[in-house]
Length: 182
Image 1: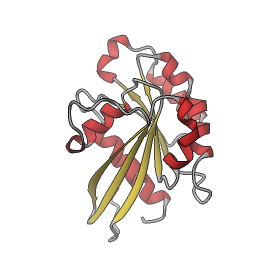
Image 2: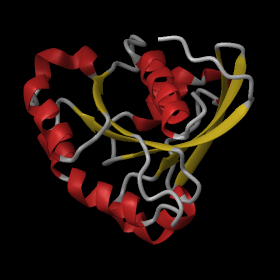
Image 3: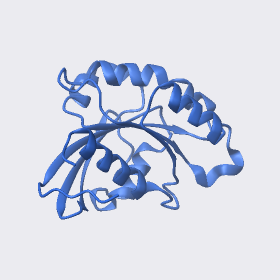
Image 4: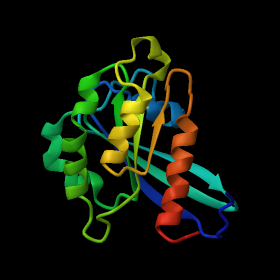
């Protein structure tokens, strides 16, 4: 599908999920120029900026990662205000990381801006390079994604780069359509 419009846009994308599921590594793989390799994972919020070219337009993504603990819920409204899209991320080798999806989605959606209560949200299973240790099948994950009416389900590996770029391009194109630019 070709999306044509002539406007440069800025979208805010929020990545959220349990501790150690690969959120920071996903972002480091997608926007390596934004990170020092010795930087430790975020304790609260981490932000990176990356520009994509889609058609003849420049799309700037502000990508925010919320710290890996639901105890940070008190800052969710500041974190998600103005979000254009979201990524719930879990680890395919840890069943418990998918078990908290409802809590994460409720906290995220409740804190969205009043004018943007519905936005495109993807579910991403990380660490697919560890498939021999897989605890959550693709089929089960897709069922969970459908249950919560998420836009799409992806799996990725930040280690190998598998599907990383695809995830952000898919979400960006979805936001463009959702917001009526295409």
